[in-house]
Length: 469
Image (cartoon, rainbow, N blue to C red; front, side):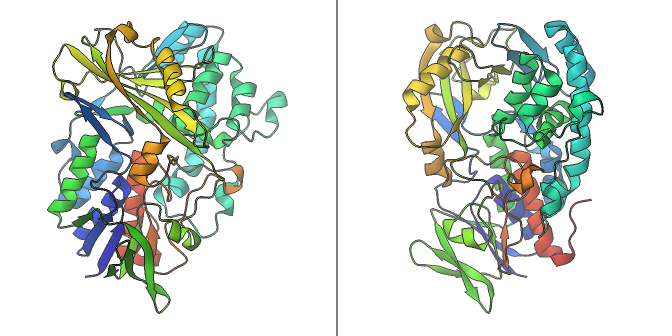
């Protein structure tokens, strides 16, 4: 039985902790804040509750596997999952809107043809065929296997160019995919919105980012009753049930070494904790030179989230998620209206969130930006200004305070010479591993859960571990 120290209590770190505990190891999680969950935060006021991180779950199979492997019981015995249908409503700059169904390619193509005309659905469908090819090429190396020491092959662009005419020229960015293959500005805006929702600028994101809309439109979007924070609660409770120990308010500042390998951790108060293995599930600056440094440049992107407490219940024809595309100086925003009674004081009120992706460069006027976000959200919530009781503005500064980084990491992407690959799971220092959103396969609920599975496999099975089957 090995002693394992896990740094951070985010979803990826806890997923690794639970799996390692089931394998018979003695696991302690050290979290610098007073609670678990990492970016899966919660804000509550006057009977209203809001998710301040992710609001929807994609690829729930990741957490279903976690619960089966750590307790032989289904995830649904701990949380209630509901498919969101329609998956999203899109309101474009010209006022045209379209509702896209959940996990139905044929339905999506038909909806786009009806709303946009001009063969828009057919062009989107052809794009998804190519996106699937990129997905098939990258799914296993980018999601199911530990990141290799040599990432050169992952840096090659997996997205195929169309096999006709001038479009056969190499496509290197997602923006080029939109301009060359989709053409209709509304389809381009649709594609761009998927990139922005994961924190990627389409002008710099590799064409391989086409896998993001493919993934959502193929595998669907799910809501966790009570909010995604309920999933964090369930994973934490699973860890406790498997005798994982938690030390909250314990900031890790470094890793101790002995005989050329990780031998424990150092805490901010000077305490030293011995360990046979260390799993860094959160960014620790002191570990950047040991393989924990992200590959992309800085600054990156973060999130501004408005938590809206509203008078009046949700209207019957409201949808769970509306994307309002940029127009007239207003940013693209995602409006989530769960209609969940667990999030409001009574049925005469509604809780909603509005989210936008922003640069984390200093000097932003967040109050002014939040006002523009509210203006955009009026296209999704009728009578918003008159219904507003109060609102909370959550900025990258809050993300920095709560998670240690103002940025929100995106999932790993192929292409671009590997610039969008996160830290590998195995450090150059033996005994030190990386999990969570800053490590392979990157950020997002599903990807973080996958990282926990990969790291636990590497520790339990050793260097011969080749990933999930």
